[in-house]
Length: 146
Image (cartoon, rainbow, N blue to C red):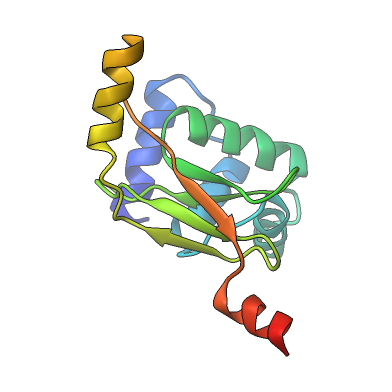
C-alpha cells in the first residue's frame, strides 16, 4: 500500500466511512492509475481482481473520494465523466478532446487577476477553481484532414 493509499484509508476511517474490501480495491485501482478512468473502466479493472465489486459500489466510493478531495473529476461530455487520484500539491486543469475523449492535464493557469477582479465585483471569496477546455486533439485533427 502506498502512502497515498494509507492517507485515503485513514481519512475514510476518520470521517466515519466504512472501508470495505471492495472500497479498498477501488482505492488501490485508482491510486495505481496514471490516467483518468471512467466508472466503467474502474468497474472492469476492479472486476478483474474481485468479481464481487458492483457498479453501485464504484459510484458510491467515487462520491466519497470526491467529497474528501482525493480525486479530480473530468466532465468529458454530456454524461461522460472520468476520475484521477489528486496528487498532493498538484494543481492542474484539463484539455478534453470532444472527438475521442483524450484528457491532457496542464498546470499553467495564472487566473489570479481574474479571480481578484471577480472578488472585487461580486464580493465572492474564491477558494479554488476548475478549468477545462474542449476541442480536438492533434490525432483527431489529423483524421479530419485526411
